Length: 462
RNA sequence: GUGGUUGUAGCUCAGCUGGUUAGAGCGCUGGAUUGUGGUUCCAGAGGUCGCCGGUUCGAACCCGGUCUUCCACCCCA
Image (cartoon, rainbow, N blue to C red; front, top):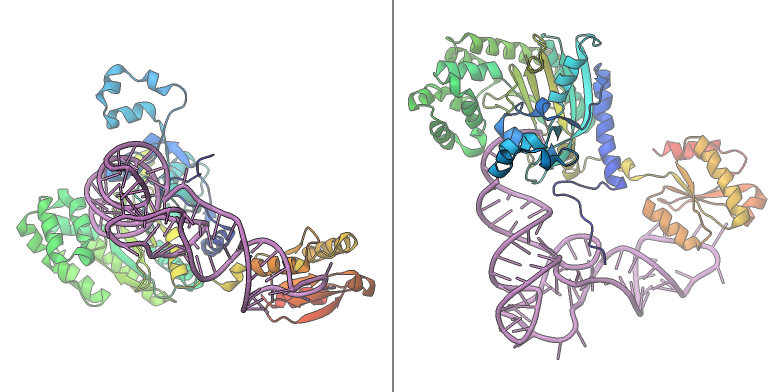
């Protein structure tokens, strides 16, 4: 007996109902990407290892899925490396390719390779799966989709404002009210690190600060000290732990802390401009919130950083994130191209919409009309009828065999078909068909030679 | 990568300190009902108790390993 089949940890199969719901989210996001002028591209699911390695920090490198070389790759490894049993030195010799870890780095690679064909500023969007060798949890998978939109070759802060609006447009359209778009600026974090004299420990400082609302002030300070940040430096940063009030009040506080830091003041003025412009254009259903503790791990951000939190009460990590990176293409040899972008976490948005019951009911309908089968002669006539309905744009199907009517009805019920058509011997001689509304139970006759009235009736129910 | 947690019918779960033939609800199949589903009634099918090994006269239950689930770290969508 064959062993029960299984799929790898952190991966999933999607049923027809799940795919319908995922497509609904994707279509919504895509629609808004396109109305904002973004163009789609796609890149390969795997890249050369050197394209990906070292771009996400040590922790990121660990989470990249490596692909073994083809052929007899082990025989080509020298004995010293092989017997050392050291993964770090052995891996590059047996693996030269890796699954993409996100869409931003492959995009940077794309921009550099195609720089002569691209018209800048270039606005691209990309909706594809990415893979991470992470340990799965709820809302955390080893294969998941990112929906990214980025602009390269434009320095204007209006881009940042547009991305906030784009987040707002998508979440409003999905009916997800009350999501919070958190914003910060990497320059402010650099400025703070500079002012407190911990410039070289910027990453450690920001990673610790990021946990403030999760583990509290004391533990954050303890972690900073553990990373080698002095007590004096931490006490200089004390005002950061007391950031309350409106965005403009917080910005005023930051100005006084960062007065001596050129980069810090630049960050403050950038944020000020973005926030006041967003204020002017207004948001529909999301809130923009300044959060100086927002850090985000990825090393390549240099300006604004975004993160989207699900509405209050939903326990879920961030459902989107992004920011500005001034030199991402620099690592591939193209200098002075500034980029800014955001990402939607499809799989997490799915879980949030499901938890809040926000998927439209219409997604459950995969077939508008099922025509029952009463035998050979009737079936042939029914097929003609079904073809006519399909030409009018209805999703219509004929039950393939003339089994018991009861059984055919049960099937229609389970598929959630709103209309069932009965076309038997009597109807055929009368030149009509009977349509039953499965929700109300009403039945009505329609002429076989003119389908418009019935088609209109079905379409009006959408 | 570290620590913990979970796994019994298609699904949700019972199953006593280890003791004959492992249960329920829902779902499924058939019938009541040869042109009417979603309600009702009757009958039936469906399990190597995640997998491998150990302890024991005897293991769903105890022990070890492994895979999986979820959780806390790490990190992140």
